[in-house]
Image (cartoon, rainbow, N blue to C red):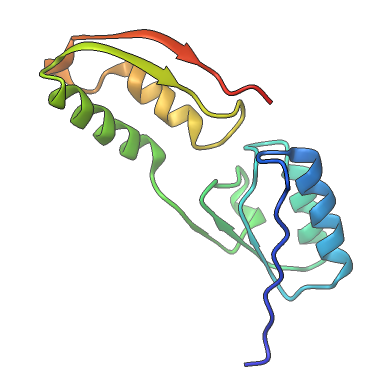
Length: 140
């Protein structure tokens, strides 16, 4: 087919500045398209606008960009529903009571927020005796 795929991946996970620089580097190579997994929910907006301004289509994966006009299509999961079902499964496996520790992801990571909300809202009526002992947040 004559196509080539080049990967531009930040060396430091979830590094916004590094991903912005990689976007500039990739744009200089004049790609036909971007398959893009943003490392942050809002801080990549300006960089994505650069891609759009260059006329390069964006295919958004995993972490949905906030502006639907910025991408052709999105492929990912419903993080809220996934978190809810996972929480219910865990709480029921615990017999509806016990203690959990919540290990949160990187601040600003798109998929982290729905998990936090779902755990806090306890979408499992039979699990009122489950308590969060604490939370731990990834430090950058």
